[in-house]
Amino acid sequence: MKRQDKIAYWPAAGFLLLLIMTSGQAQAKTMVFSRSSAAQQDNNYDVTFHVRVVDAPCRLNPGDANIDVDLGETSTRELQVDNHGAWRDFAIQLTGCSTETRQDVAVTFSGPEAGGAAGRLALDPASIAQGAAIGIYYAERLLALNESTPWMHLEAGDNRLNFRARLEKISDERLTAGDYTASANFKLSYQ
Image (cartoon, rainbow, N blue to C red):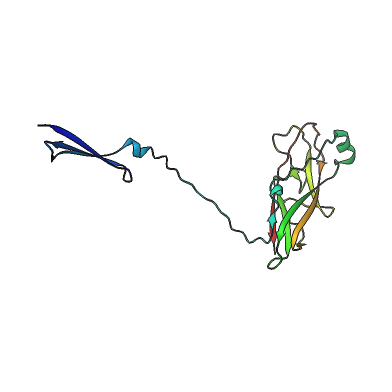
């Protein structure tokens, strides 16, 4: 009697069936179901999509999603005498604005507030410089953190929202020279 083993594989199910044949006749001696190693190595992975649908009449210029404002160099002497460094202008660019449903925009900056300097942005903890904070201004007035600008009228098409910033001395704190960074977020609200 000659024995022949027959193997069948169903990749969709990931199972291997072993059927032992003796003398050309199927005998139900042994039937093995198992996950094959080939099925376990499908290399199937999950993809998760996160989407937020917003009712915004404008698009943020792609280059303005992360704005880098270089405040340059400010000497500790300048901060001691003037209490602030030089002004630096920056803008948020809105493109493709439609004024059919919403005609106004307001901007709110948020971030950690500097102790002893109400409404001003604290320097990041890793900064070497100390005793100073960042003031963000709109229309020549301090725009305190977490407070919105007045509503600004939108024009159809592109709009430029202009701001200014400067390094400011925190009263009653000792100034330490060195590099610094400060990070803020901004939110656009429409009506």
